[in-house]
Every structure is written in structure tokens, then in C-alpha cells.
Length: 357
Image (cartoon, rainbow, N blue to C red; front, side):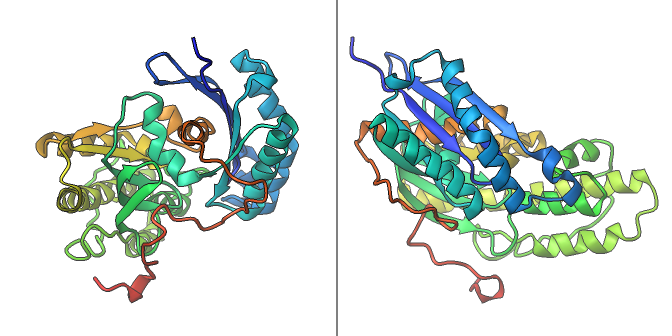
């Protein structure tokens, strides 16, 4: 029996220090042997958001222990590793540099191949960790820093169909939470508040709702929340605003997803229609439920990563590393950190009002 590859993944693009080891079974399906994630919520809570320098310092303090724990939890010998994959971007450069430098040094010390991974590609491939997922597929990537529809033709072959022209959806959730006085990290807590509120209480704007293809915009929605939040008098009004905000996001994604289906089918003409939703906001159950229903009505298979793999983690980085290892796509040890690194590098960068919609 041939030896199955063992890949170490390292993630430090923002405020999670993470390491994971994955392999695969006889059927070629990935197996997570360990997945360790250390959050920095307590460090950044008093500031209401991530402070890059503090995040980087925490990565430096924790990363050796996190990697050693991932190796210990996996039950393997360190010398059995076949490659080391580290996030090289996009993200906060001071944070990226910690995990990237550690991964390079670790690979060099073991004389193993090094693989630089695009954090967004990690999200794009994350459902492969628990689902048999073949190319091509349509991807909705929704996280704190990104909101994009992409057609995924193959590993590292992406075509952007639509993106946000201002704020990312996760950023809109986080800023709304802050305006409502919700403690950091507040974005995921909006869903909890929304359950107690009336989703139709406030009529909120839906920017570029009827134009712009499947491009997205959330800045105007955020501004409306800011104005209303100033006059909130009690908890019920807070719950109603949270519910109205979430409902508006759902309405926007519902319409834009249908447009993305049409664009994807024109471009790819897929035999099987698959829709992958990944990134931290993919953990929102109300958004999930809406997207599942849209997929059913449009004959798409809806595919999500497990809830614990929606946020930043190293298993998804190791997943990309595994795919690239099998194709012998390795990188040199001088590979730079890339704070900006789009999946579709040929896409035109959209700048707010400069976009032709």
C-alpha cells in the first residue's frame, strides 16, 4: 500500500493562529488528523476590532505551540510529513509574515516541499474536507473581508462574476453589531439578536439591487443602520433593527445569487449545477436556509463546509496544500507575503463609484 500524503497547514492571516494536519483515505478523500485554532477574541475585545500589531505578537507567542499540538494530536511523527503549506495572503501583512516565515523555516528544517496558499482558495476548497466535490462549481465567498461570486473551473482556475464594490458582507455584520452596542466579535451575534426581532420593522436600503449584475454593495446599508441606531430607545428596537438588517442581507443575496446562477451557466454550461458557499458568514443559519431553498428551486446542489470550518482555520490551508502536493506545485522559500491576492488575478479591481453598473 502506497503511503498517503501528510500535509501540515498553517494559518495566521488575521487573528486566528491555526495549524492542521490532513491526509487522505484509500478512496482519495481527505481526512483531518488534527485541527487546532487559537482565537484572539479576548485580546481585541476592548478595542472593538482587530489590532494588527497585537495580533502579530500573539501569533509569534503561540505559533510554535499550536504547530506542535497539531502534530501531537495527529499521532504522527514529525518526519512523516510530506509538505508544509502556509497562508501567504491575502490578509494583514504583519500577521501573514508570522505563519509564512514559520512554515518556510519548518519546511526547510525537514527538507520538505513548501506550498504558499491563497487564504481565499482555502475557503473555496473547504467543502472538500467533508464532501466529494468535483469541478466546476459556482462559489459564493462571504467573509469579513470578501464577498464574491466566482466560477471555479479547477484548482487555481477562477473567474470572478461579481464582487462587493465597497464593504464586505462580514464587515457589514460586524459594523452593524458595533453600532448596536454588541461586544466584539459581534457579527455572529446579530443572528441571535435577529431571532427576537421583527424583520419587517425597518425598511432599509438595498444598494445596486436592480443593477450591476451580481455585484454587491453594503456601504449604504451600513450608513442607514448608523442613522437609525442613534435613536434606538430599548432592546426591542435593537432586536428589530438586527432582524431587519439580516433580512435585508438575505433579500440582496437572494436576488444576486439568481443572477450569478445565470452568469455561471452562460460561462460554463455545467453538466451538474453545484453551488458552494464558504467563508465565515456561511455559518449564518438564516442565510444558509435561504440559499438552500434557492438552490432547490433552480436545480442546484447546495454545498457548505461544516460550521466549524467556515471561519479561518488551517485544515482548509492544508486542503489546498494537499491538492497542490499531488500536482507537485511547490513554491520557493522566498515567496513573499501578499496582503492583496485576488483569486481571479485578471479581474478588474472595482472602486466604489468608479464601477460601471
